[in-house]
Image 1 (cartoon, rainbow, N blue to C red):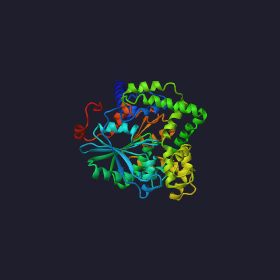
Image 2: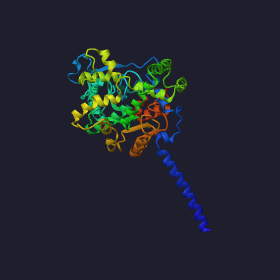
Image 3: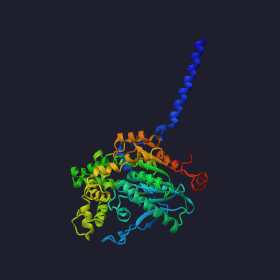
Image 4: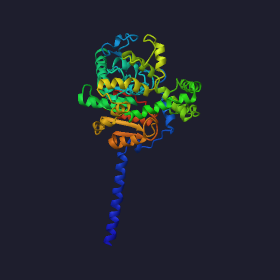
Length: 447
């Protein structure tokens, strides 16, 4: 009898203990795991293409201003680029003391349109000053801030970026009366990889004092990502020039038809997705590659103005001809023919090739510096077509709760989704006093 009673009690204790363990595990899971995730687009290419909808939205738009930051010595006097050697950042300024958020996008991004401006609006309406930085892989950064004149190697780009951010902050405070209570950082795609290196720099040198980093869809193997982009770009040959242009024109027409739509309305995205329902996977891949390579000709043009490596045959004063020549180059061409020869000389690594530079500039070499740094949070999507799924699993295994992996979203395709957006806002949540003073109450994030 005593034995039966003991067994019953032990059984009850076991059940209670089991429930406690399950509850604890559930609580400790990442947001993507702990909550039901109903992101609607399970085709990663369609999800990626939905980012074309994102900008700072229809009027009235938040007031912004372009701030010019002095560039590197001598870069303002290059032939055909005279007077263009300043770095341009986009500022959304609050009229009172507020936290400042730096946003850095990736390849093909521009500070004046696209995902960064969408995020800028979201955070500006939450009471943040926002500064959008140009991607290091843009002509403006290459000309004004890249000491190598050939960006693409993340450790070097992060160093150049860190110095320009310091210059930017001084100008914002001294010339634009931007009163800052704290500084945060959002990096998207390649900007997320550069942000990871930035976190190591600021941890060592503390010249800026960035409090939190949100790194979204960083390329875990940049060499893998660039090869994918080049493969997709090569589809233009398969389809032929006429068909390729027809696919691109059709897509542009769809995007433009939504120019006045509300940018974070799920119903708008549903209509948008239906318009793209007839596109094949390869057509999506072609569109993604074309978008990512939009600004590459300008980057090539500028690098060849800084270092004339005889890559372009047209005379240096023939802007259009040189840009037309540059448009025939892919990212791998840029890396192999332009960047790597310059990196070898500057870093004294005469035998290094593209792959070795990309591996050295990936997340892997700094994982130990990121691990345990609660300031750094990484968000990824398991179906990101620019990242090998196994490498995402390895990143999660290495950094644990610092990494949140969503099952769907492609490459940045779910950044607008309410659950993702709310996660970002909660991560950067300011003090209750500042929230109550700055934050509108009608955006649905007060939870």
